[in-house]
Length: 153
Image (cartoon, rainbow, N blue to C red):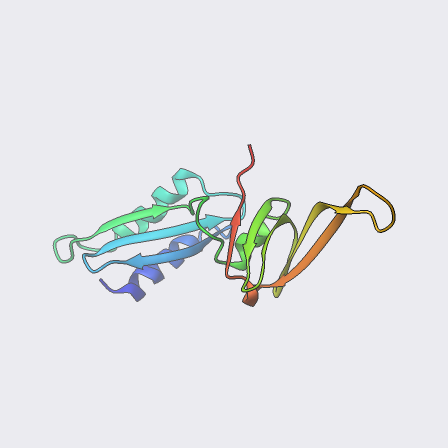
């Protein structure tokens, strides 16, 4: 299976809806094609079907036997693209770097970095008791080892 041709067909199908973008493309040795797409405002099932038909219609199953799966990212999978971070502003993220594990609300995502905010209880500087303090962390994308959206019920 020609990965370049498959990717070109997917990009062509995605170009019809500019809010959609390719997150991942995996083609296994036995020609199982797994396409993961996301969108700035989510991805309706009809779009997954449309993308699948667009790719499937351009291959002859008599020549190449393959299976095709078009899906959206699972909530348990880490964020991969900067565009996914922008989509998840105001959601709680769990972020791992080489030195830290942070959890906070994503308040900003630009071309180079993200900004997380969270509240913590710390001892008062003078006297007994604790006080709530707001913390902020700015993390460059290159330092992020893994970032996942936290599911809150």
